[in-house]
Image (cartoon, rainbow, N blue to C red; front, side):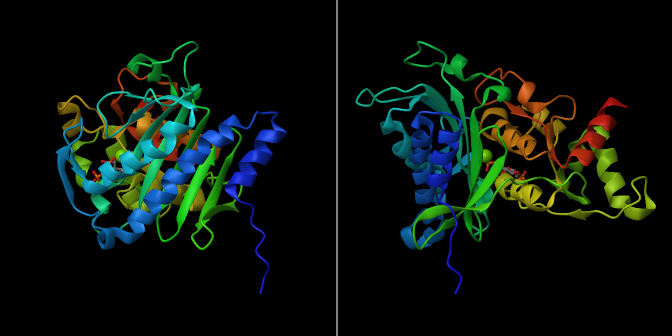
Length: 337
Ligand code: AHM
Ligand code: MG
């Protein structure tokens, strides 16, 4: 039998922090997030055994029906992170307004934003879902942050990550110096470094998009997907494969492991409701863009780099085109043509 030598996420974080001369506070802040994800992973695993499937009977700020597990995951995330004294405030896809740290706990110097359980439509059908989070610095001398303090461009993120609840539970993290993936060893309850320095291959022949929206897309995206569908006989001269899990975390994880391009583009149906896209800038697009760029990929709206956008509101939505560099650049070029 091979002796298992994998490094734990905690050890890896502390070693990294030591190498960079940090105090350790940041690693400790992440511990709450790690614990939240372990708890959510356990709930996702148990599903109906613990009665967490089905509708919550409520809707979020975007008017979407909330699943019971959306709400429970949101409460779990807050419960595991609010007490430790590292955060000054939180914002979640599932909450209308900024969440303030209760008076009984110390206030810290970071802000955290999260989508507690992304891929809600997959919860009840036992398909992969995930948690996405992003950490920002709280502006100086602010004890009770307001919405304006959260409206920072993605370039200001100091850490972003996702936890994928798939056939294995995996945490993928960046702190701006590459991307590492850790697999949860459920026997010992610890994330183990299994995917060091993840890189997205530069080229790909796999795309990921919800084709049922095709009639609502703009011309450049229609053109791009038509090129893909034409395969070897078309302008690209190669055959493409398609995948769509409908959980961004799972679709993006595939990009990090074997490359690909993921699009949730501008959509006239969404624009008619003044949204312009489906995915949320602060909770989904920014953290995932940070990871994708750190893994060598590109993340754009088709017209601009996602992380350069200063959010105009907490729940703003935007078009998303991300993944293998060559392919995303081609879609950007089609938008310029
Ligand atoms: P959610 O946050 O309500 O779960 O919505 C976001 C999800 C993404 O994970 C996924 O890429 C997309 O919605 C799927 O949308 P669709 O059902 O239109 O295919
Ligand atoms: Mg989401």
